[in-house]
Image 1: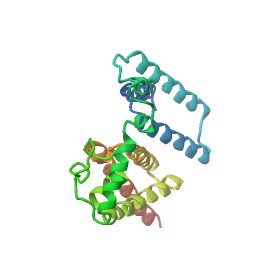
Image 2: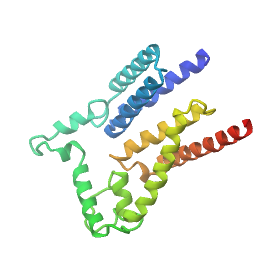
Image 3: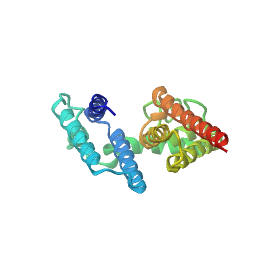
Length: 236
């Protein structure tokens, strides 16, 4: 990689993570942190973790947080936005886990109750949104609850089957040293893992953009699998 491309990647990282921190999304930061830690563990397992690049990553993260901090001009954004939300009107509204999670507990409780009403087939697309006991929001901020409310146990089982199948193939690819398209496999798996983690606490797969990235990553995994199989057959 040339110096120009190297600097461009660093600038792109700072810009994206800085904006992520600036927006104050806790679920996004959890997904980012968990994915990075998993990838570092993966590199350590393969013996490919370099101390120099680890230090560079730490420096980029610190820079991103600093820039997000100095650019935070609204009460709702920045690195400390979740602390401010906890302390705001603390006398009127006592602290609770539900408040800490931005009403996630109440939303999930209502979604689980709705699932219990029709566990096998669900209420159809947008089932949560139009449920009589709907609290607020367009989706229950959890991909599994979203699928169960909409399509029930049967529909969710189909999604989980294909999801696990694709992820299993991706894991085999990144652990296979003979993989000719390792960068593609790693990138696809990173996207799948980060979106999946984020989908546990937010409506990630309700929106078209992350859903498109998930489908594109699955397509990449399957394409790499087919191309590796062709290369192996041609070499025999």
